[in-house]
Image (cartoon, rainbow, N blue to C red; front, side, top):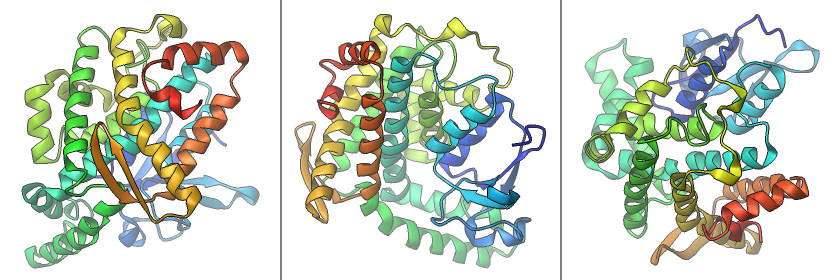
Length: 347
């Protein structure tokens, strides 16, 4: 890839994964060009010649493929790893394979569990759904009449609210999702009392995954915004700081030694093991058995949701990365995860 040419991507501010990747690009000082657009109106926003992805997700990156033609690429985790290979400066993946594995676990939690809280608070609460419906389409459809914008608001609400079933937000799971988000805030607030990022003095991919969800939870949607600002002011402030870390000058020794992680990191791993690990295991069982629904217990409470094939892939990817660890690194990872509940994913 020509590293002097800006990477082209499309996305919107209301997409936590768009915000995640923009923050990564800024921190890594990788030139980029953002087309502020949804897939519905990409052509009108300067993307007439851009290919469409197989699955419409935001952000969409447009990388040169074989023969030089652009290819539409989605899914933030593999994109981050591609950028790690193609750009040499200011990596977000730790060099130590054991620490990199813990970072991958944190990233997956941010992308796949915290997003449940984000989607839940946005569309399960009437005030939040009203707010999101009015603002989200205005980012890409602001030029138009109030009546046109209101039609767009109704459209996005009618499209997004039924999708709550995909992320597992329903009346049964509400107590689990909301209690987990409050505990996460407490863990992260405690961590930020003495640390800048989860795995040291420089951000990892896991930090950016968590940041992406918090751009919405802590800074946009009314109900979780108020909760975050009241319960975890450091978390609220951290989101604003991580938006642009281009001025941070990281050093190689800014990463933690995995054998000496602060207790607050184990607190985060304990929360991952408490809620996300049992969901991954139950979803994997349901997917292997061809069951359309996951019915299990998380944190002592019932959990019911539609079986999600992508979560089965996430677990398979984590397990493959764990198996690829050198024996000595795997021993350190096992010691780190012991007693957190995360070890059940790899036993």
